Length: 172
Image (cartoon, rainbow, N blue to C red; front, side, top):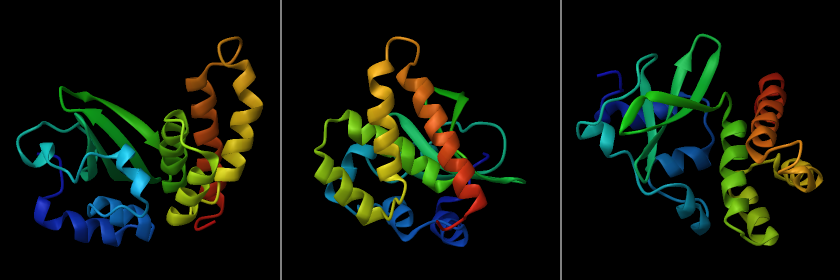
């Protein structure tokens, strides 16, 4: 199996340059109560017989319904991925940096119609510094959704922009 052993998972995550907030979520502790919307629990499926994608060793972060979210170490940096346990060969790269992963998670939280004040509180709880920029980009682009710009296209561009900035300024 191409997944880190369950007994080694937390130690492997601690060895990566991950924020305390992301490590807390991987341990099943939510830095903000509304983050329950992003996970349904610590990894279960990959340690109970579900197949994992081929490629670098997967370090599971958590489950979200039938999805597994994890991180893989690649020669050029981290890769945050998800896959459906029914289709493990269809792995999706969510982001190349932790900040990019937060951008994706914050987009999902925004789509859940949380109040902006609540989103700001969550951003502070996880130290996601790009939330104001992401919100501004979203509010500028939203009128174009459904015309010449789709939401998924905008999201991928936003994550790529956050990943690019984060890659140049780690810890920013």
